[in-house]
Length: 111
Image (tube, rainbow, N blue to C red; front, side, top):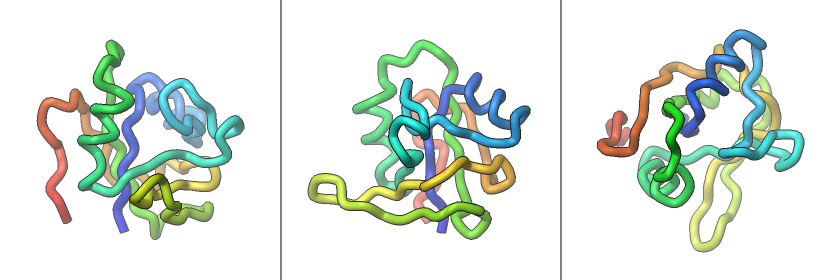
């Protein structure tokens, strides 16, 4: 399955150098939250609108292949929906695409 995560480009660059991405969501670490927030393709636009629309730093949309994760993940209930959560550091090798993202148009096709 493919899941997605909006990241600050600087955080993603640092993660590639360090070998692990540990940002749960904007301004929140994996250590603090306990998981990395992710979304399905149909949820990306809503996540951007709610949490990233006022971002001034460059963003990237990470496309993650869950089969390549070396840590657990699952869809957890959030309100009336479910969202994927990754329960551990994200290995850069599990990211199959990192696309500059400004929310203006979806850079992904719905699969």
